[in-house]
Image 1 (cartoon, helix red, strand yellow):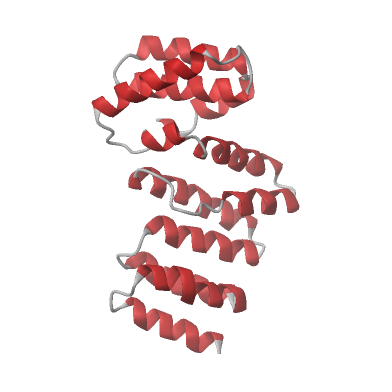
Image 2: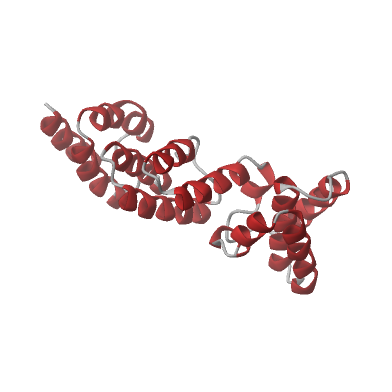
Length: 205
């Protein structure tokens, strides 16, 4: 039955299927019954005009079901870049499922990375500056909002470090690299591990 469903879905992908129906109704059934077949369908979906972040989300869930940790991590990295290119995360990012899976298979470093991205993804400002071509007017608006947040924040903690990292990213995009360095220092003082993570993460490049 699953093989037939896979072939049926592959055929549908050739005829501009309804994206909501494909991801919300048809693919989940195949994912549950036969995640390996779902991966085959997703190879075809990636070549279609469907949302790449949603394709990669489904691929991640299939790889979690198959307990393939390295492949899931690679798909996760591709998912992040696809979201950055799209200017935001899709409606249901698979970050909670990934974190739990990596903890289960004792990949603690990967779990920590996913947890940090999930924490930043919850920040509305992060999503406003995620794209590669953010208008300067939007960046200025975000910069002012961050100033207000930081004025009322405590001196230390992960949230402060993330806000400082966002401020540094905004200033860098605005060409104010010297000012950006000051906020990276503040981020490091607030929470060194968080600052180190975001200073090397491409999502804030």
